[in-house]
Length: 83
Ligand code: FES
View: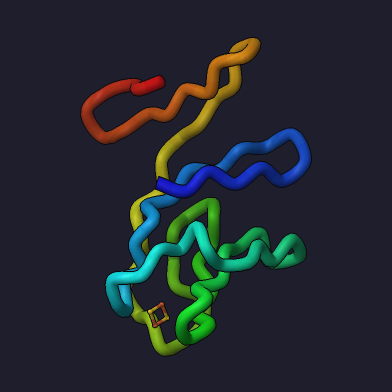
């Protein structure tokens, strides 16, 4: 999973690009689009929805709700919360 902080918001997105098996956390954050750019071929993934905003990726990547409580970052996976 990649965690991206933009201002007060922390976004959780699966770390593997839907186009090929590379790590999205090595890509750059596009602050204006609130998106993460895959370093390999440049697809942008919306950090709020996981939608692939640009080609060559066409499939979304899962996103997870993130809350910050004090020093803890809580990520809500499909089955529950994880620290
Ligand atoms: S591997 Fe991510 S866009 Fe191709």
